[in-house]
Each structure stands twice: as C-alpha cells, then as structure tokens.
Image (tube, rainbow, N blue to C red; front, side, top):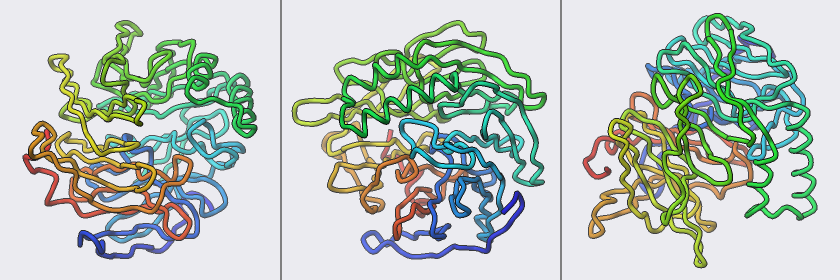
Length: 398
C-alpha cells in the first residue's frame, strides 16, 4: 500500500462497564496501532485528524485518522529494516522508525525518519517531500517542533556506534547479564549523541549541542529554550538555549527522587518524580513554573509506574498507572489536601505488555473533550478515546 491509500472506518462505541463513561475505539485491525509518543501532539489543532502508527501492512507506517468519519489514510511508505530503533521500543521492526515522528501543528506536516533521511507528509494535501539527509547518523529520541513551527529539534547518534552498543545491550539482556539498576546509566554514558535543529522550510540543519551520553527526549520549553530528558548519570530534566548556551539542570535528584517523565503545557511543566525505597517506590507529582523558576511538589500515594498525562492546557491531572497487579487510567483530585485527596479510576485497562507501543500513554485532544490512549485488545494495541469533558476544568487539581 502507498501514500494516500485509504481504509474504511473501524470506529466502534461502547460504555465502560465500571464507570459508564463513553469509549470510542478508533482502530480494530489485527495489527498494533498507536499514536505518536504521548507528549508529542498527535492531533491537528481542530482535533479532526489524528496521526498514528500502524503495522497493518507488515511495516510500521504513519496514518491519518479522520475522527469524524473514521476514514484512515496512509501517510508514509518507509521500508527501513531494523526500525525498532531504541532500548524502550520493540526491536526488529521494519518500516519507518517508530515513536520518533512529530506533527507540526502549525503547518500540518508530520516529520518522520526512514533510513538516513528525514521526510514529511502534509496531512491535508498528502504532499510527501524530502526534508534532509542525516548520512551516517540515526535518530535516537523523541522530537519536537518550535512553537511557531519553523524549527524541528531531534537527537541523533553515530549509526555504527549506536547499533553496536544496542546490539551488545540486547545480547546481555537475552543472557540475563544486564543489571538495569546500574547498567542503564553506564550504557547511556557510552553512547554520545547530538541535538540538532532543522529549518522546516529549507531543510538546513545545524548542531546545537554535542553530548558524551545518550538522552531520550527533547521538547521546546518556549521559543528560546529546549527541555531535555535526562542529565548525565541520573534521571531528570535540563534546559539549553538555542545557541547552545545556558545549560542548566532544572530539577536535580533530591529526597523526592528523580524526574522520570514530563509534559510541557501552557501552565508549566508537569512531571512525576520517583524515589525508590526498600518498600518499593514513592511517587511525587510536580509542576515547574518557567515564569518564576519555581517548583511545587506533592506526594501521590497509591501509584506504581506512572506516565503523567498530557493536557495541553495544563489543568487536568491524570495518569497511566501500572502497579504490577492493575493497569489503569486515573485522575487525581485535591492533591494538596490530604483530607480530600482522591484517585478516581477513569478506565481499567488490560495488563501491560513490554514495549512502548503497548503503554497507554494518555493525552487530551486539543478540544480537551476526549482522553486518547492505547489499549491492548484481542492481542493488539488499539487507539481509543474516553469522554472526559465533564472533568477537565474542575477546580480539583492543581
């Protein structure tokens, strides 16, 4: 199948048996389907179109979902071998590199990687174009566009060095000789990378900063700074100016633990910090306000492994939570008031499987009426949406 190929609607509607909330399942093919990485916008600003990955052709490709009609349109036709690029993603895939693409909400172009090339497809016209080559390099982390849509930031490494390091790590894991607790940071420190910026119109690329260790995510914090995850030797987040100066750790590891995931919103950076204890883990939820460089953190009892949900407005407080026994979407109410603090179950999900494409990775559409997530149904990850319009603007959260 080629760019522009269409599929009929796969939409079905149900109500959650436990909560009564309306659920829309948008995909149902016998193949894994999952949106862009959850803190990268998957929707156009009018919430009509959603970009998602699917493996329905035997290759990882990107597709456009019309959320009104359900029609699905193919956006890419990549044939890269070994496109399951990274330590957190499923290895030995083919197609485009999964979980590395990003949608420019200003121009409606989706940028993606195949082989040693960056390409884009426009969601409206379906025009596909070459952006630039990255000869001898491989993209290794989540990416992002500037607020004005004119610049694209991404992380890349020497292809030969990275693939050998990845292969060595995979071999040790397969032999049960890889100690994640200390081995992951040592592995990161042996994989240099570069953060670069690309002019989205001309395709000109310039290197912003070279690092002697591996980083996972890069975002635009604002028009003049990037937010990067993680610092060397630890979890956390740091910033750098667009001229490569001003490198500064925003929130170092402390007695609340270290930042694991974060989302950039109109109301600051929301994040979870984790402190590992003899009894398991403590979760703290925080908000960083870039206008005055201040932090506010509260402990969130009752959580396991967490992904902080992405609300572009930064008002609705929700999570994916996996504590080993249950896998759920939760909203957190009155976190600053111990007497009123409450976790509400939005949706109980099927047990989680290994790999990024099976995580729920919840986010709100721009219209903030529906919470989108991935759930494994009948053996395949599928794109779903939950009606939360009555919850998003309550005064219960932060």
